[in-house]
Amino acid sequence: QVQLVESGGGLVQAGGSLRLSCAASGRTFSTYGMGWFRQAPGKEREFAATISRRGFSTYYADSVKGRFTISRDNAKNTLYLQMNSLKVEDTAVYYCATTPWNGSSDDSRYDYWGQGTQVTVSS
Image (cartoon, rainbow, N blue to C red):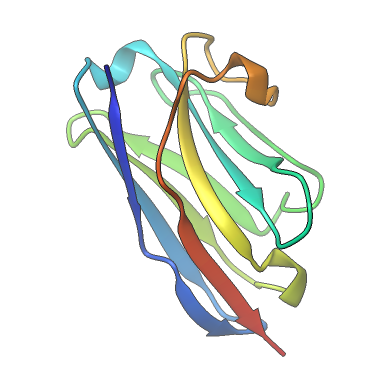
């Protein structure tokens, strides 16, 4: 069992920044890949970013590439998502999740999910 708790969401103006955190417990953090997904109101959940077990490889959705940075601190059992140049269309609930794969954009490959944190970007 893995427990994931996201934090860091909030209300920010367009062009601003936020950093999300995801604290993990219950299993050795460095043994699984991690990802961030998001779900906007009335839309399906979509992939945002993923990172490999040791953090050497990352991959981003085109919609966030160049603005978001995923990282992890295996010593602190924590995953991060630095979000810069935020846009109104980034408004969503953001979820972190674990995967036995070494990172993936496919949400069906993820087995544990956090409860989500709301990010709202105003114009």
